[in-house]
Length: 174
Picture 1 (tube, helix red, strand yellow):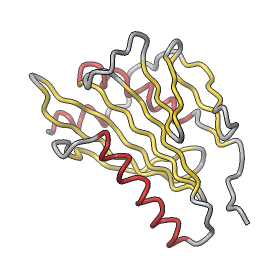
Picture 2 (cartoon, rainbow, N blue to C red):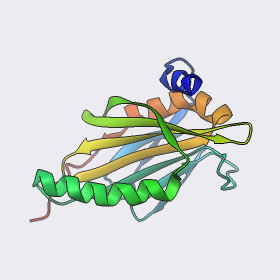
Picture 3 (cartoon, helix red, strand yellow):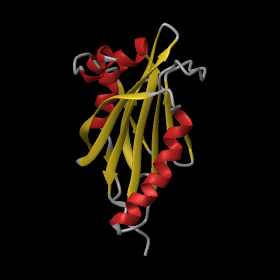
């Protein structure tokens, strides 16, 4: 597990070339790896490399976004928990363990990050979840892949987060 912790903490490595992505609802812009495919279903944007076949081992990045439409902090936190927990449990099973945690920023907003891992065949499945503390809105980035693919992809994941930008101030409906 110490090896995994060190791998998740590294900052070296080159990012894949990125291209602009604009949310069809004009909520945000983002940079995704050039040539990767996107699909948007309800509040979930899925980003996969060309030739993605849907196996657990393949790299995949998911961006979950949903409005909470509230100015009350306690209500916002409760709604966020109700949204985030089912989202994460649908993609991360109980075998995953958190191997690193920290803080970062996404579009100037504070965010919590968790690196996780689980044994998989002769290697590990790795990933990172970033949960953004954004007023009136829930925003979660979840990336996963087998160790041999995830480690080289992590610099790209970091660059993608740096290029995320909310276009509209999300405010509660009156």
